[in-house]
Amino acid sequence: MFENIELVGWVGSTLVILSFFWDGWKMRVINTFGCLSWMFYAIVQESMSLLFVNAAIIFVHIYKTLSK
Image (cartoon, rainbow, N blue to C red; front, side):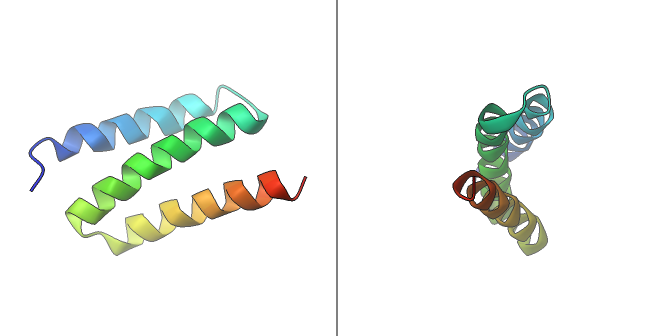
C-alpha cells in the first residue's frame, strides 16, 4: 500500500523525541504530530496496539490542555 511506511515511523519517532526538549503546549503540539504519524503507521501496519496507545496519548494531550 505505502512503500515508504518506515519513513513515516521514523518521522513520528523523531517528532516524539524532539518534543521532550520543550515544555507546555509546544511539547504537546510536536508530540501530537508525532503520535499522528505513528497512528498512520499503525493503520498501514494493522497494529491496533500501536494505534491505541498513540490515540490515548493524543486524548491525554487534549484533556490536559483543556483542563487548565
